[in-house]
Image (spheres, rainbow, N blue to C red):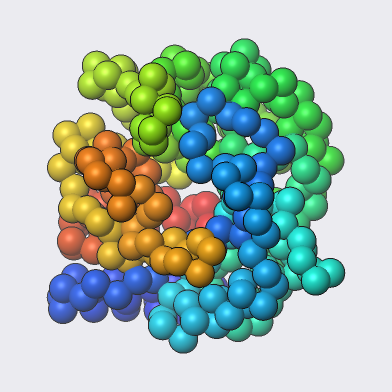
Length: 300
C-alpha cells in the first residue's frame, strides 16, 4: 500500500472515531452468484446464475468511489467465472485502480487460473488440508495447489471458513501457509449459519478451541492476517453490529455490512472477522488499532 493511501485511511479512521461517523470505506461487489462448486457451507451461490452487466459493475464502482469508499472487493459465486461484454475481472480491477481505489482485492475458490497480477490481494478459499477441504468443497484440493504453483502473483492470502468439519485443521493449514512459497498469509472467518447450513455451526466450546489454536499460531509467528483482539470479541460475541464501514452490492441492491443483515437473528451469529475488526477499529479500541498497524503494514 502506498504511504499516502495508508495515511488517508488513518485519517478516515481518526475522523470516524472522533466524530462517530458511520461512513463506509470498504465496498464489495458481487459479480455473479454462479459457482462451479457446491460447497456444504454455502447457501448464497447458484441461486440465479446471473452475471452482473459490465455497465452495472462499472456504475457501482463509480458510485462507491464518489461516496468515499477506497477499498474494493470483487466476489461471487466464483468471481473468476464473471465475464461480460468481452470484459473479465482483470479489466474491472484495472479500471477500479484507474478510478483511484487504494486496494482492489478478489475472492476466489482457486479452481480457475490465478494469473491476476492486477489484484492487490487474492483471497483464496482453502478450508483445511486435503481431507477436510475436500469434505467441504469436493475433490478440488490438488487442483488448487496446482494453480497456486503456476501463479506468479505475490500476495495470495488463504481464506479459511472455520466450521464443525475443519476446526481441528487450523494448525495444519497455518503450516502450509507458512511453508508454501506462493502463499503470503492466511485469514480466518467462522461459519455464519445461513438457512440449511446450521449443522456446520460450532458450539461455544469448539469456537474456544479454534480461537485458542489461532492465537497459538500467532505466537508461533505464523503469517495470520487476523487481529487477536477481534478473536476475543468474536468469542465473547461483544462487538457492535452492523458494521457501518462496509457495504455489499448485489444485483443493484445494497446491504449494510453484509448480505446476512436482513435475515432475522443471523447477525448475532455472524462469523465474518473482518466485520468484527472494523467494528472495533471504528470504536477507537487502542489494542485493535495497534494490531492493525502491525498486521496491515506487514501483509498489504
